[in-house]
Image 1 (cartoon, rainbow, N blue to C red):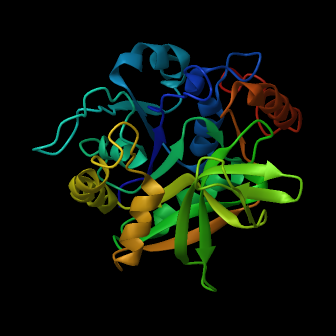
Image 2 (cartoon, rainbow, N blue to C red):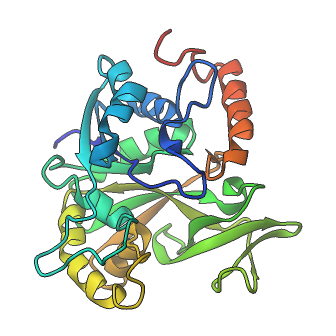
Length: 306
């Protein structure tokens, strides 16, 4: 079996953050969140990482991370292109937003031909999750009707500074995912958490101890073709309704494959606390948390330099 590859989605625009948050340093050594994810992945067993970016940001990413870690782990870039569309489709005039995480993963179709894990560039997932997903892929990575999702406790993934998007999950007694609802606006409340489906006009309380997806997945290579095959139908249905902002999202696509009986999703639960920089106001808290993890000995102070 081919060795599992780590895929990092880093082509998002970071509109709520106000900049290219994927390469914004989060310690005093110039390390970014991806440094810690890749460090954890390497010690879990991964030997290759594919970073999905926009072509125009390639030099920035190479300077921020690729040039520094190339001697530690193989680094390859894939490019998410808004114009990478099926025959017969065009980008709506005026659209600047990428097509979402499912289209991002499609961009690795000529690079990855074996099992792979997928993460977000701007989320810190915790040490144990990478070992968990790597071991799963080594054992099950060639099973085309199976995949895995590392699930997190919702309350461990919220920010004090605004709303977040999470895939809210329901699993059965065998830890197989039976439902995933993409909630694009979830906030922390005095009693736990709440979500809105009408842009904040009303809010619905939700279980803060429920399991959510943080876009940490483990797939066989067949998933890439499934995404390619499903893209035309997504565009036909959604572009007429929301041409500027509709997104082909990975949790939603996995959910559709699951409901069609084509995919079983194994939920591998993590109790780690998520850290991320959805908003600029999140950065000081993330920097504090990362320094505490270093002080506990989970990471060298310089990460790759020591």
